[in-house]
Image (cartoon, rainbow, N blue to C red; front, top):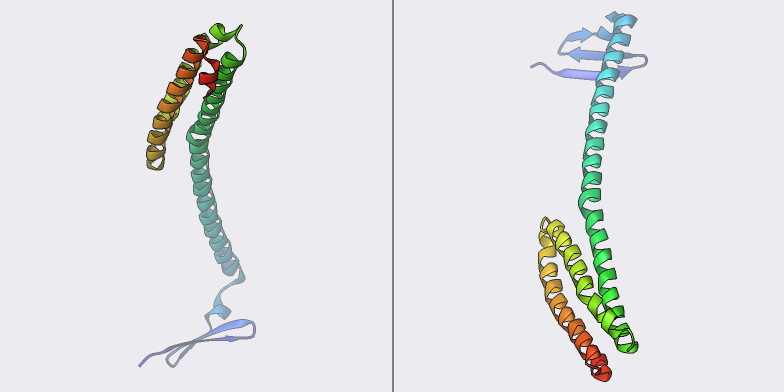
Amino acid sequence: MTSVFFSIRPKMLHMKWGDLDMDWMKHVSVKFKIAIMVVVAAVALAFVSYNGYRSLQRADQGMQQLAAESMQSLEYLGEARVSTRLLQVRAIQGIADPARTESIVKEIPKDMQSYEKIWSAYKELAAHNPDTAAKVQEIDRIWGNYKQTITRMGELSMAGQRDAAMQ
């Protein structure tokens, strides 16, 4: 039965295979040892470089997605929020300033169209994310109620029923 046995002696590797004693490191020239070390280092460097390159490519793809979808959707959400606040302000201004009620109430449909344009652009981006589908439907339902309320406030303001519009 043959067995392989390794032991480390000071300053040399001693390998024993069965009864055959091989001190092979003694017989390898220094030039060859250095050449092997350089080749191993080059292979390791190539491996690390390739993995680094792949990691950078994945990071670049992630950043592209972040810029193209996530940041764009956040911009749309911010614009939609501003549009809804503008509608609230216009509705309150229409109630509070009887002299400007007519001109203010005429601007409300334009602001609603602006919101709907922004929201449709957001929904196109959100269609890629299944987690947002239920939330988009919920916001669409809320928007329908909000739109009716703001429209009703404008109608009541135009009719001079300011107290009813505030309700």
